[in-house]
Amino acid sequence: MSDLVHSAPLPELHGGQSALVADPKFQEIVHRSRSLTEKILLSIPKTHKSCIHTETLQLNSSENAKLGIMASNIGILSPPVLRVVSENFSLDTSLKRMSEGLQLHRDLLSSISPRLENKERVTELTADIRDLSMQINKMLKMLQTETVAQPTPTPVALRLPGEYEVQVAAHLTLVQLQSFGQDMVRHLRSVDQSNEEETES
Image 1 (cartoon, rainbow, N blue to C red):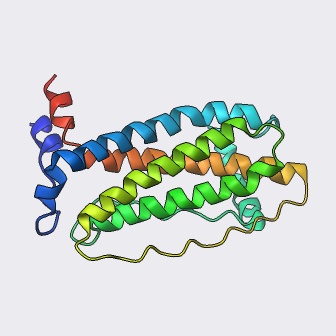
Image 2 (image 1 turned 180 degrees about the vertical axis):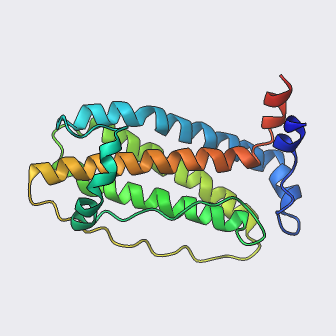
């Protein structure tokens, strides 16, 4: 029974979106997006290890929640919240928020990268985020019957007076990207019809 629920088409999709989401071309992009998101999630711990040398800044630590005030002082913005697709939260909106969140993290990493001693993995991660953004935007274009202007990204202006602030900014950006990426995987899984094959195997 759970398999049937897990792999059923989304009833919340509007108009002809259900047919479009089932289209092999759309599904190919969904699958590619999932793979890229999972690649990003796998690379985050290695990226963190390569550029964060402050021992108190650990990727999966309960202490990260205490850095909220410092994140605000530095100027790190939070990504848009991803919610389950429903009558009040369309697939279009979900994809737009994915696109906006990815753009935010690209901008944050691009701002921080010049101040890091070891930036090779950050550069690679930023390139993967760019590639994922392109896939998400492809799906958006397929879903939208009218040309919709992309929102202007909010300029990122970080206050990084010293090395410690640079370390905290890089750390919090990677922590935030990890959480956002995990949410993305869950949302992409809900429209990835290859799940049906996975649940049957």
